[in-house]
Image (tube, rainbow, N blue to C red; front, side, top):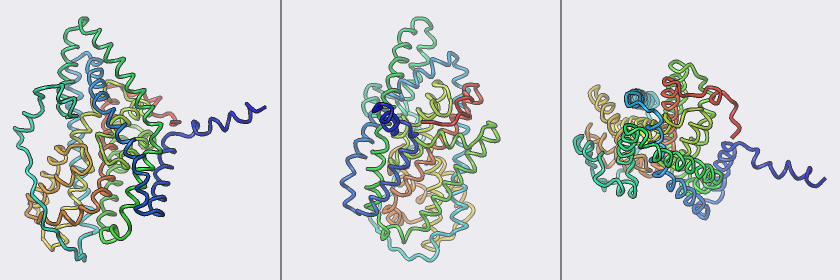
Length: 418
């Protein structure tokens, strides 16, 4: 009697899908932050622990999944084909993103009618040369790259190791099996960490909501609204449209299967930090093979920054409108070109978009002091652009998986339960 009556209640928490738990944590965090104000900082350690646990997963997960993904292909030509498709799709979506950001700002004119002062203590940021970027891709010491978390160098080393293991055939099989076992262990550890996600998201959002009150947000509410609107259009129109047209897939299932990663991306504001969750969503919810997801997602976390491109387009036009600077067609072209290149070069860590924005402003002659206007709400903007970045990573992963015949459509079309 007691077992039958308590069993349903005992499993109630387990029966709730993870994305619903995370969304509940998000909304409760907003409520706690709004009610408690800066006192909501007491919940910040919950978020810090969760972010630390996620970051703990990044390097071993990226390294092991890339090696496993490459060796699973067993064909260097296939890897080259997947790489070319991945980069092409990322470039196309980035061009769409910055165009949408510019168009949204031109339509809604968020900077017109505002009178905001600038802080002059902003230093210009120097972008590394293309040659230096290429040179820095190759790690002098792969152990140092792993220890410092340099994702691009880790990707290069993992690709090289994976190709080498693939080329030596049977002699490499014992090492491949070790990496396969290690990757499986990392997937399980990711599931364990994700069980804590609702509490971590609650702590992160309560802190942000408590520290960004209405007095901070109201003067810049319009530019925040325009950036968020452009982000929604990118996900619902561009990503969903590409999935429907190119992949002949139901975009609703893509959105549903991506929810866990999107909520973590929004609360953490870190594309790289969300990578373990993105891998879990791609494989478990969307049916993409380990080989494709293990290659495409780490690459996307480092070079695909569509949300950053939207942010740069919106804010550049906002600042021009704010100071009454008339942008020419050449300026718009420069924003698109510089914004695309800068977004690809932006590291997937919180706040990097603000640094890259200074490069865009410098190219078109806008005052860097204006960065101080948006710096106060950069975290709010960062949360939206990170969510777009992660949504783009997952969309490209699904499309590449479908094109390579490595998408399990039974999993993709199944009703998500967790």
